[in-house]
Length: 279
Image 1: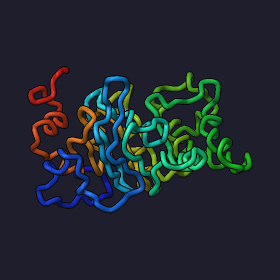
Image 2: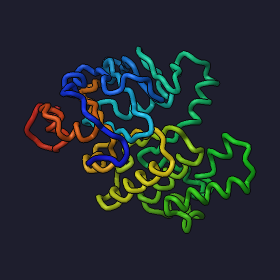
Image 3: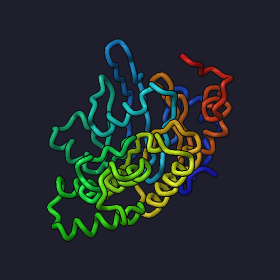
């Protein structure tokens, strides 16, 4: 069994052929977060090629793929940091590039993002790092901020280290602090950009446990971008696989890890034999 909550169901044998076309037959109903026919190039290099994904609400979706296939670029599109060349980014039913910047800014407040290195402010202690979104985006009193910050710090096991700066703690602790900050505004959507990067297998597993526990407690639409197959197995309710800017597979986790398509099977098994080479 993969993931803890969503019922992956059956798809009547359509997963492989539909996913290879980028067809989102898994979820015909609109969801909180979608991309439709997304295209993006940097110079002559096309990163996104007509990419379509319909992310499941109240579930953890993992996006996998070889390096350079556009996974992190996808996150930047979802939070409105990159504008697509073509296509739509739909959040809460709105194409975020067809609305005023002020409205797009308000939508961003519903996102929590955990970047690879935690993206903490080095000059601030953990308390002030976690409190930063509250001070920037709300009118909460310092007493209320303290209550919420300490609650989040306790949830991620950092209550005793709250006065330390990022340079005084381990990489795993920085990830947890970044997670606490991502959660402090109670976001409806949480994005994780390679949260396991730089962590050893034990701390990766512990971070996955934390992500699962927090999601079970609060729910929300979670998207995890990773290279780590073990993390994907442990976390995922749904799995999307991107290759050369296109969706080559998207399904419930059980279907993904049982998929017979040569590329999907090779990548998820971490095998050298198959269509994916060094190029």
